[in-house]
Length: 391
Length: 198
Image 1: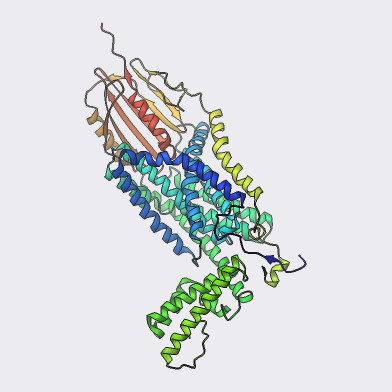
Image 2 (image 1 turned 90 degrees about the horizontal axis):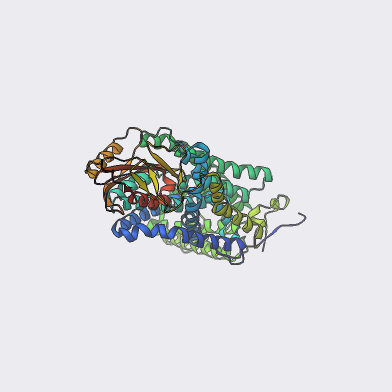
């Protein structure tokens, strides 16, 4: 390139982009999935409404708790709720609906190959269908600029949400199938919830797709060679499939608790490893923006040091509380959030975007509010109006 | 529009930036083809490699005195013989035992099966409370369902005036939801042929 690259903001604030063909493919697949999965979802509810309600409440609450947990795993929170909902629906409706057709087919093929008596049918079949389908959702989102899959961390986050959506529908269907078989027994619903949610569920689909999604995020955002990007994306998918196969294998199944711990630990370690890498990359990107792109009076490199992880941010707020009381802590939180929003806007939409302008205004307002608090606390009306961080 | 940082002008642009404000027709085709592979191609391969499906509604004899009506998608396993008959569907197996003398206590028998499943040393099962049902010909039956992390099983015992039979379904958990209805229907289709008087 001979001159400075010009970057425009995505034309939509979320993945809903009617000018993108990928969005329409998602819409068609969503409709197909809805047609496939709705009758299964309603079947148990119509026959045993109380059991259906209990299962829906349990899995709904479970989903909310896990979604908050996934959100908390992020270094910085900044996602579009619409895109998050789209990711959740891809997992629940598209993967769930296509899975209704593809899972039996794959199981049949593998059973023909291994023999119907094989205990390894599920371990081989499930990863071959479920992991690619879930990762396809991250790819589809990454192909729509409005979804803002702009780092490996973004891919990891949306992968986790897609996995969560798929897990919720899958577990609800299994629970209701068991409930129907026991004429709507509440005990069966609760036992299924404990088995699939508490004992074996904590590190299943969301974790697996987070790992694979991180690879997709890397593929779409790294400037390394094409071969390397493909290797990382395919490698992450293969790792997720291998871990899924190991988790579903009959090895150690005589005790579900032992099996879950022994099979879950590699998954947990792999997730921690990937999280560490993607967080480091994300920190580097934002630190670079604080150094080169965002003006220092809004977010200086020193400011970013104080924003770089949750623990430090919490410590800064704590200092503000000691210095200025709760209003100071709240004002500091406002400043931190607006500075992070500005860095995100600069990264995803560019500094001249409307989003960056809004975030800039919020940073200036938060700085002024904090300065006013300090001025009031010092009883000095001539104190400087600009304060970018804690004194 | 903004200028990227100076160092970015000498580096390749990430794909996510290159895609900005494009219609992404190629990407849409890739996503659609991948989805179609799972929706159309996989089922076609499965249909090509599996045993020929049994004719829906045409009764299958199990031994001398029992018959069932297969639902859609079920095939007869070639090794099936006089001792029992095995039907397969998407990796699931439905084993239908031949008739044995009736004991008229199917509920007690299914309770024993439920206990065995709960005490299974090899697999941790969530065992649902047993239920009863009536076949299409009016015979009494009892059924128990159990699920583990990766599998589901159902056992039905159907008792007539003279004979009874046991049906056992073992299924991968991912398939169970789609085949359970037809398996239940087959259990309800059990018909006994009365023994001929001497």
